[in-house]
Length: 102
Image (cartoon, rainbow, N blue to C red; front, side, top):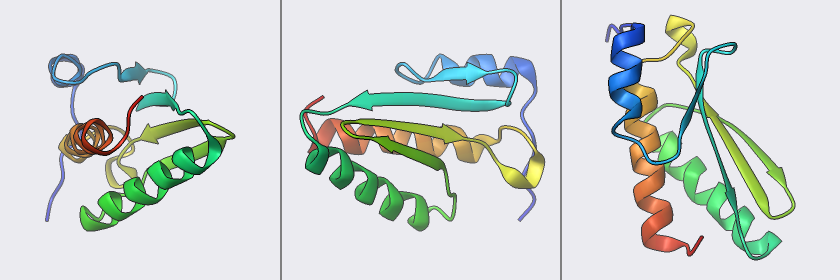
């Protein structure tokens, strides 16, 4: 399946559909961080995101710093952003809203 790299206008339009995700122009990626009440909840979120990412065959960079989880999304195949990044960002937000209180 061919995946297209998004242009600036498409990225800006996509950002309007997301809640609190940021576009990092330097790294050409989407980023977001969450703060959880405790370490165990933060790690549970990481595990759920890993399951979700695997189901979409799209694997983000995830960093755990005690109760803070940071995620960076970009599509390696296009060396930038694609629709896959926005789809996964929306799915992560939906899952977090349904399963975790942040």
